[in-house]
Length: 266
Image 1 (spheres, rainbow, N blue to C red):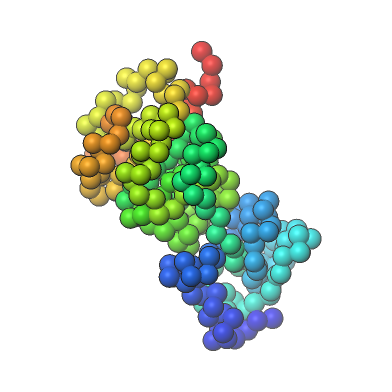
Image 2: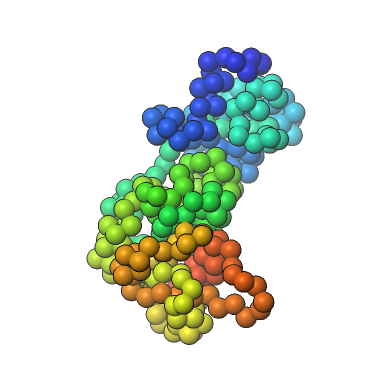
């Protein structure tokens, strides 16, 4: 059992909570049994697994699956896992994984029909939830702009509940370049923005087209130059008394509007 919270091994893992260390090593942290369950579908991406004795007993089948896939599993003390994780109450299971993002050109080569482009989204919970919603809606990829939160931030990864392993992910993209390449691939680019045409007014034929939904910053929305690049601004109407919708909620509605049009027949 690994019991020394000050050991070099523990410190090396804990450093992956910082973006610089993740960028330098090409690794990231995945906390929790649900995320590990999804990761085990691609076991070659898992470098190491750290688990407490209590979690080892509680998730025995999951750990057996990891060992059967020849993934190294290390038992650690509660105090060691707490140093490794960025949460106050760790879930007992932590994996070190290889980053799995693709290039923008790789994504375009796959001929995507539905894409989410995160433009300057800063909140980790929102970013992870958008990625999870995109996965659920059957999207073909998610693009993180260079000014968005790091997709491998532990809070982002936890919020995806494993969806980070399910669809292509582009990180550090230039917004203008991404929109240009989407358009060149015949994909319409719609910005989810208050003041645009209301979503229910769009015809099914338009929503059924290959589409990229651009999602702006939680606080101030879009930079004017970004809106000049999109094909159309689209608003999710509010029929009740709420002042606004949470970004991730609005993103889910937009992505599913396209998914319904693309997947459900007349």
